[in-house]
Amino acid sequence: MDVKLIVIFALMAVVMHAPVLNAKPISLVERCWCRSTVNTVPQRSIRELKFLHTPNCPFQVIAKLKNNKEVCINPETKWLQQYLRSAMNNKLQLQHN
Image (spheres, rainbow, N blue to C red):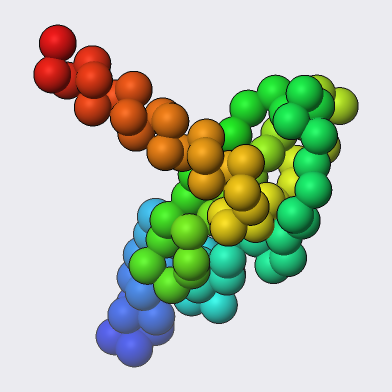
């Protein structure tokens, strides 16, 4: 058997058994979750808040609503700023006790 043919079969075997990487393309990794934000969301319709801070995106706040819809809230919204200040104050008080 020809040496070149053996090398080709060996390379094909290696490629077929090589592990598949689960990495996303750079263009998908660098996209921000929130492309647009809303300023008004009824607070009683919010089930939970998620806070995201990634290197390539500004601070993002995602609200999961009681109807399971997710919306991005403008982090500069007044009630959200008050909520964050209150949460930070509560955390600081717990650390000092």
